[in-house]
Length: 344
Image (cartoon, rainbow, N blue to C red; front, side, top):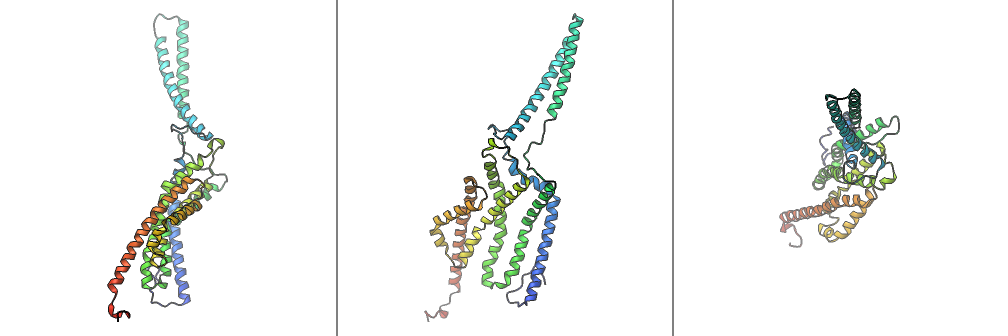
């Protein structure tokens, strides 16, 4: 039995055939996940760097605002010390050259000339030492999460690759799930379900992108700079990646609001007019959902997560109105006065 073509609504399958179809689709999904995991694990360096960017964006080393984090202040001191040593090395080289010029002047007493030559050599050696010290200042000052166990670097890399593989293979897995349950839908129900199933992975990926570029950096920035003068802030890799993935998945799921709105309106549970009339209650509910769903207690992250939900709700209401007008027009076009008992 093929797994790329859904079974028809009119087809009749036995329980064994249904289980065989389910087994085949599960095997294909696992194969796709393994292929995606292989690619993600192969590119694990790039993947970890991508996950660390929101964390690194919260680091304040060169900004005008002085950081209160002791570790960031130590890194800032290293930067300033390296710059000062580089300038000192240049000044010492200039002074050494000046001493050499003075020592070459005629009519100098031998003792004075010897002192000038000794000072010139000392300055030259100090300039070399300062240049070596300036070159030894760490160049990789980006904030990185830390690991505490012997196996934690490998396990963490393996876990992050698994999360990324699941995200990549999610559209195909959702399609296989849709294809498996599709025979239970009538043609009319299928017209309702197909657009919704297409919207699910698209909106989920849009929510993940919004969370990565907008919500996650702001959440990390707020949490890492909260009372930072009282802590040496070391971020454990496993906790950081778990927090990031949970936040991205939650925002991706919250972006499914248009799917829910279109589902209840197209199934006739509630109309778009009723949703628009109770807009205030819906926005209050969205605020509660954003506050509960986001794993951070700060109001900034909640508002950042809530804003696109309100926009998506308004767009889904307008889209539901469009589909309702189309359904009413289709019903008017298909209405036949001869088939209406009241008219007869």
